[in-house]
Image (cartoon, rainbow, N blue to C red; front, side, top):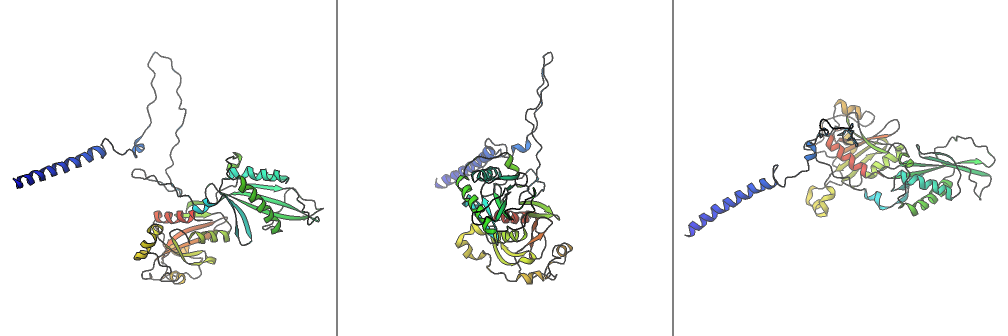
Amino acid sequence: MYLSYLSTFGKLSVVVATVLCIGCSTLYGERGVFRGKQTDYLRTGELKPIEVPKGMNSRVLETLYQIPDVDSRDEFGDAIVLGDYDVPRPSPINTEKGEVGVKIQKLGDQSWIFLNASTSQVWPRTQNFLGQYNLNVVHSDPVSGTIETGDVIFKDDATKKSRFRITVEKGVHPETSEIHILQKEFSADASIPDRIDWPSESNSSVRANSLLNELAGVLAKNISNTAASLLGQNVGGLPKVEFLQGMQEPTMRIRLFESRAKASVAHALEKESFILWEESVPNGLYYVGYDPEWDDKGFFGRMAGDELPQTPEYSLQKVLKHLSASADVKERFSAVPSASYGEPLEDAIGLIILIEKTENAMDVVVRDVRGEKLPPAQSKQVLRVIRKNLI
C-alpha cells in the first residue's frame, strides 16, 4: 500500500509538472495569452485607405499626419539592424552636471560660466541682464551667440573705455550652456569702428572677470525660470561634442581649444570605470585601465581579486615600443615620436586613448594595447563613458 501510494504520487508529480510546463507555454509563449508585445511595432504596416461605396459623393482623402521614415542609425551614424534589437536604456544623468545650476569654471587663465540650462533659456536672460545694468548693445547675433556692448567707462580710470563681447555657446553636455566674456580697452577719446578686431585674450582680465562674476550671480538667481526663447534654440552653433565615423572607426569630435579638450578628456579618464595609468599630453596619448563593471562591484567585490591594478605592468613608453606592425596602426601612430613596432608584450592589458588635432576640433579614438582597433561596439561603449564625464 505504501509503495502504491508513492507510485501514484510520483505519477501525479509528473503530470502536474507537465501541465505546468504546458501552461507556461500557453500563457506566456509567443502565442500565449499573456505573450510579450514589446516587438509588435516591428510588424506594423500601413492601413488601406477608406473606400467610399459607389454612388456616394466623396472628397479626396489626405493624410493629416505624415509618418516620417525612420532613419535607423545610432549616434555614430551606423545602421541599426532591427529584429532582435533592444531599445537602449536612457543615458544616465551626468551627476557632476546636475549638482549645480550655475558655476564658474577655470582652466589656466581662461574662465567661463557653466549653466545647467539650454541656450534657449540662457540667451534671453543674458540680454535681460544687459538691460538691467544699462549696458548698451551695439551688435547681437543669435546664430553665433555673440553680443557686443557699447562703451563702458569705469570710475577708477576715466582715461580708458572698454567694450565687451559676450558669447553664449552650447555646453559639452546636452541641454547645457557656456558663457565666455572678452574685453578690449580703448582710450576714452578713441573712435571705435563698427566691427572690432577682438583679441584672443582680454586686455584686462580683472574687467572681464568682474562682468563674468556679476552675470553669473544674476543668472544663478533665476536659472530655474522656465522661460525660453524660440530664437535662442539655435544659439551657439554646432554642439561642442559629437560622435561620428572617422577613418572607418567610431570617433568622438570635441570642438574645444586644444588644452581644454585634453584636460577634459584626462578628467573623464579618472572617473567612472577608468584608471588613468599614464599620459603623454604633448602626443595626446592616455594609457588607461577600463572595466565597465568597476563601479558595480563595490568595495568587497574589488577586494576579491578581479579589480583593475593601480599601476600597469608596463609603462606607456614600453607599450609604444611594441605596437602592431599593421598599416592601420602605423598610420594612426605616425605622429608619435616614440612609437615603434614589435612583438606583443606578455599579459599586457589596458587601452590607449588618442586625441588628434583636426582643422577646427580634436578627435578622440580608442585603441587596444597593441594600437589595433577595438570591435565597434566596444569602442562606442568606451567613448560614451568618456563623453558623459567631460567637463
